[in-house]
Length: 118
Ligand code: 5GP
Image (cartoon, rainbow, N blue to C red):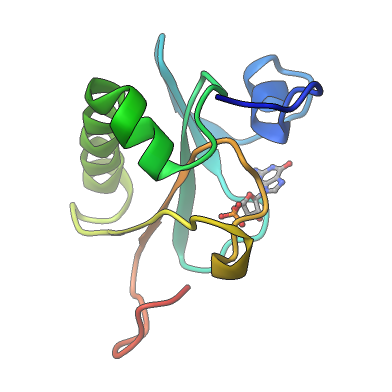
């Protein structure tokens, strides 16, 4: 569960306190373009709840929501990157996580060959 008192940047996007290029939204999930894209298509897919800091907490706490997030990734990739994509969950600061409100990076378009990172 989240220990933070302030809403996360992503909760502030959900609340429309911070503008974002939103490409998908339903009751549980919001998706918007990353402000600093690392690929031709770089969309963040975010559960609206900030109860889960990272993907391992989400998998343990609400596997159905994780499955919905992944189905959303496929839907967005169908619309934005010919159905193919890389999904990245940075988990922990040494792995590059900076926002501790679980989110997936959907990367698509022509990604450089031979790399796993973004
Ligand atoms: P992390 O480093 O936690 O895996 O990913 C956080 C991502 O959020 C980064 O790729 C960063 O560019 C993006 N980001 C941070 N602040 C904002 C913002 O205000 N708007 C948008 N659209 N993306 C943001």
